[in-house]
Amino acid sequence: MAMTITEKILAKAAGKDKVVPGENVWLNVDVLMTHDVCGPPTIGIWKREFGEQAKIWDKEKLVIFPDHYIFTADKYANRNVEVLREFAKDYQIENYYDVGTERYKGVCHLALAEEGYNVPGTVLFGTDSHTCTSGAFGMFATGVGNTDAAFILGTGKIWEKVPESLKFTFNGKLPAYLTAKDLILQILGDITTDGATYRSMEFTGEAVYDLSMNERMTLTNMAIEAGGMNGIIKADEVTEAYVKERTGKPYEIFESDPNAQYHSKYEYDASQIEPTVAKPHSPDNRDIVRNVAGTELTKCYIGSCTGGKLTDFQFAAEIIFGSEVKVPTFVVPASTEVAAQLEVETHKGISLKEIFIKAGCEIAQSSCAACLGGPDDTVGRAQDKDVVISTTNRNFPGRMGSKKSEVYLASPLTVAASAVTGVITDPRDFM
Image 1 (cartoon, helix red, strand yellow):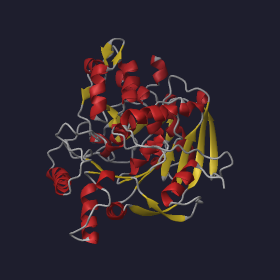
Image 2 (cartoon, helix red, strand yellow; image 1 turned 30 degrees about the horizontal axis):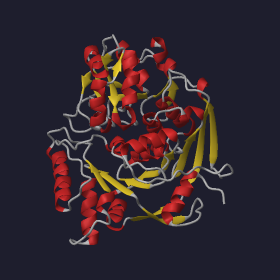
Image 3 (cartoon, one colour; image 1 turned 90 degrees about the horizontal axis):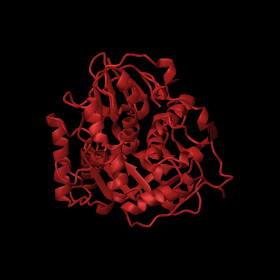
């Protein structure tokens, strides 16, 4: 029977030869990830339901990254980290990456990749909607609520319905003025924020396979913005090279059968797509940058699991090099590894970090920071009447702070061009 890549991976995790969309199956989970927002309630539910003598099904498969509300004086946020710290100590969790230590990694979704937890053909669940990021590695990855996570914590299993699949093919070469962010915003404008609800979003085509792993993660990261259960890209030699640098774990590469059944298919000519934005207040409120060019800004933000990877800063540095930003511009590396790379990676002989500092950008510590609003002392947080252009993934009212602010989502090239001019600007004006 013909199956999609997602169906094949779920069949393997369920111990079955085949599965079909709509079928309910028990899955064996390879990795469970949680963080400081959802970790404490997950632990609380687990203890309540499994009893005080509760045991973790497999401590090696549990990964915990404090990353959301950490560089803050907020006592409630600090308490959440304390709960994780105490839990990791009491249960001897080796895969706990504590803030304030050399082990701290930054945003969970990029850290999962960097630390070798993303393995083709496996199944990963996390207490965060953007867990679908890991699907860039040819694996099944999705977010779950605290109760489901608590059940996985105690049993290593979860009951799931096999999703239908949507296929998005990007043909041709990607022009230099486009990034993966433009591609996913194009899709969101076409299918809207509920167009892939409880479905798998499969990305393929020449333009997709020409992308780096960092860029592929941007595509799968924002599958959830269309309501997708997961985003996925077949593993290839680029994937294998990345994985082998970080882990010796065995992996299996799956791909969709040529005659696999899809709910729907979409094809694009990459050369015909223009630099794209999502206008306030929804990721599917798509427009081309040219149509909103000149909109005055009060802040620019380059960061998050979506837009805080090394490639995002390389794109931004191309534009910002030799200029000064006209509005407050925040550079927030998604991980400590990326933060270190900013000091050694160069553009025209100058480190990316120096380029941003000379331009007047504010470089913050690696974390989710303002992407999720955060406490009042969060770096880059949107205030009343701010108009922000950002590489983040959501622009709902209040998402980055104040409900009275307006947030435009865009590629790092577009955000950088806008930072230099102080108004929304098409990156082609600089290229």
